[in-house]
Image (cartoon, rainbow over all chains, first blue to last red; front, side, top):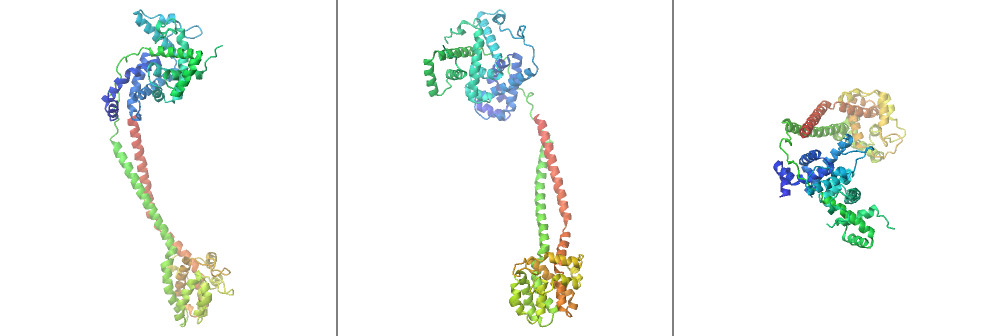
Length: 201
Length: 335
């Protein structure tokens, strides 16, 4: 894919060229939105909004990693959605204790529909990870998702977040520490290969 | 007892894990990790966390997020936009032209204003020429040969009365009175015993005809004239001031005009009392010049000036108005 050529054509109003870029990055954009928002429908909306915004603001792209630039649009779209949620909080679907705290019960997390073993393990792990990610501050979550889940490097994330490298490093380390504690609580639930001490990857 | 790792340690460990430290820091951190079991444990915990996160399943996008033309409607500007933009640009250019013209004309008018005093230069030359017949008419025949030089000397006396006291006076020794009168008329104080111009103005009749001939304006009364004359007498021309002080020629020239005209107006009487006549010609000279200047300023054609400014205002309103509407149209098209 001639990314630079497609961007140039898109800048000249070629919508097809832009849509080819959309197809190239839509999975990554959707997954980032999904991990950020923890909701499929909201992630779809955020992704669509992000690509629309990207097309309208294509002239603000000044070169560099186009992937990071697209993810910046997605991140901003997710932040907008999260701000809306904070203004209009909704009831969580997770069970609550009497003290209005979410139950972090492996039993509840494991209470998914019947599925093949591998699929179940994956689903359990995904639930656990998403649960831990949801407990992170929004800024930390964006950094750790882009670096550890999406595999971007620090400099790309710095572009996507619009923060210096030092901030990215700091946020990532703190996010990993928080996730470590959270994921250890799911130790028994996680597949054997991912339990602490058994890591041989 | 193991010392818990600080957030700073974890930050360095995290960057070390990702290979984001500089080679030097990477080697140093590796040495620390090798020597510290706590750092080794911390590093393993971070690696474990990262491994789990990297195993997070990637979902396929549930649908395509490609954009349709209906989702990104082309920005349609009103057909009036280019017209308004052009009108605004043209009006702006015309406004600038009108403004510059206004400035130019204003300077021109100011120049006329200055020239009302400046006729000083051309009339000054005329005055020098006409001063000759003035002296001839106003005074006795023997003056006819000496007066031109006397007149010239008197004009020079405004710049340096030294001349008057020296060779000029001697040059007109045949008609000492005339020379003295002319010098007095110019404000030069050759002798302390000489009567001040104000006194002369108070005694002698004002040459009204002369002023009418110059500008047709009213003549200030004699007291006012005298006061103006006293007030406007430049230093060096008045009574006790140093005679040698240079005087701007602009003031001297109109006085010569006045000398000439008043001399003509009173030519009939001048034969009887040349000294008094000279005083009468000298005293009101400055007020006459003042009134002439003011009359010329009043007659400046401000009508054209006002018209131009009205045009400027109209152009400015058109430029701003059409520009504003064009901006509104563009904003509405973009929104």
